[in-house]
Image (cartoon, rainbow, N blue to C red; front, side, top):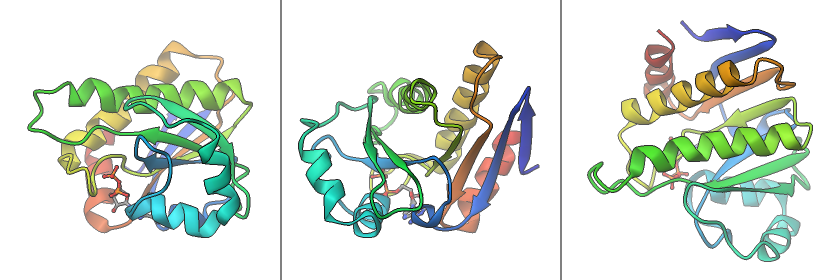
Length: 176
Ligand code: ADP
């Protein structure tokens, strides 16, 4: 299964490059400094241009599990929601709660800012080492719980954007 429907919100998974997504906001898997890094963070900064780094400098960083908003600058997306996923340290250091918080806080920030279409990367599953299947279950489960708790949500579309087939497959499993 690669698509779910909750009331007026469609949740789906696609393979692609999140920096090219034409949505109201893309989510960045940032680090606590918000000053750029590797992986999807580096790709988003390159695509958005130097204005993004200047905007991030004004935010004084972001704690793990939290989320902050900037414009998208040269991206097609109007906004970037920067969230900081946990580094995987074996699973006994609050990683699952922190990762769920990334999705929850990103959704709350999107809703508060009138964002209707939102794309997430697989936060923490790259450099931060979170096991893919566990991370995608948390991503899908947290989005599902959010939408169940907000039946009047104005968010119409949530896309999980994957860089590779393994991640697509993991989301499809989590949708079942
Ligand atoms: P983290 O530090 O949170 O682990 P990474 O950027 O290393 O963040 O990886 C998070 C996920 O984003 C990984 O699954 C990686 O394959 C994926 N990714 C990297 N670049 C892109 C991109 N341009 N679009 C979508 N996903 C990406």
